[in-house]
Length: 220
Image (cartoon, rainbow, N blue to C red; front, side):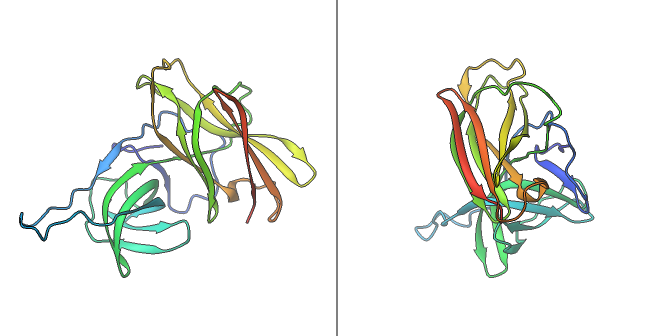
């Protein structure tokens, strides 16, 4: 589900991930503009920290705070309204912290991948920029080829060997012409991999234009 700002959303209190592809999610850059005061030589561009986080909205639909993958929570100093009420959005946030408060300069929506194992389809190829484990999330920066169409995203269980569970990115081109590289962010919450015990390995497989690539992690 998404709102008009383009963030992937799940409501607060949702007990489980929906077993379906995250259809129709478009990644739109939300510009959170902080006004500059004056034009003298004291003005400068701040050192912005960029990382994945979950942004929470309040009962009025305003961006209230965000929590990073290592569980640091910041109150947003420059909240924006117009979002779904009491919701959580997965995003890549650029911010500057000051104690327990942070100024949010930009946030780009990220796909929170869901189990699409029941859809017996061959994944389409793409380029993978980076994959890493952060807290309880496996985060990805992907580079599919696109002409602005809607592509579909999920993950699939591929089997177990010993204490390793094999999972693959389920990417569907959906007829979108392979024209230009597009940056896409995605995450898998390791708690959604319910059949993988803590301490066991996760092998995450990707179909790329250069062939299959695999990243391995231990479930926290």
